[in-house]
Image (tube, rainbow, N blue to C red; front, side, top):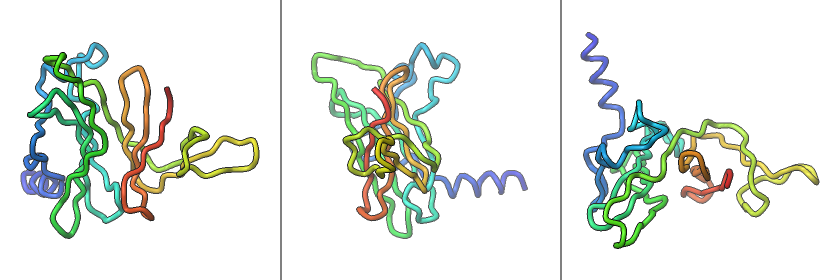
Length: 168
């Protein structure tokens, strides 16, 4: 019985085996970070329904097989064939032979988030108040440990992911 329940859970989760062409999972060496010694794979994937189609989607950090780059990819599930969307790519250049994973991700829960003044997708409140972003669906927090952070979210009207900076 327990095996059946576990198999059902795996079957409904997004599959990692069909990664986008030219991309791979980071190696254990590339996942090293002094702040994550106990859990090096922490903050490398998020499973949530980003586009409100009642299907779990997958956000994942991958390394390039053809260049010295890393990227944030999202695999949108749905009634038709799943599709991969590249949200951000960081290319380190040829002078760097091997670079550990620099960025991490986490789930951004629905709620209200502060926005910088320049962000067009943010809602303006009363005069003098800081603009906000109201998430009704889960989003993706994209960050460098101990540094800058941004938030990716699915824009239902535009049918695409938008990015808002959270800190510097």
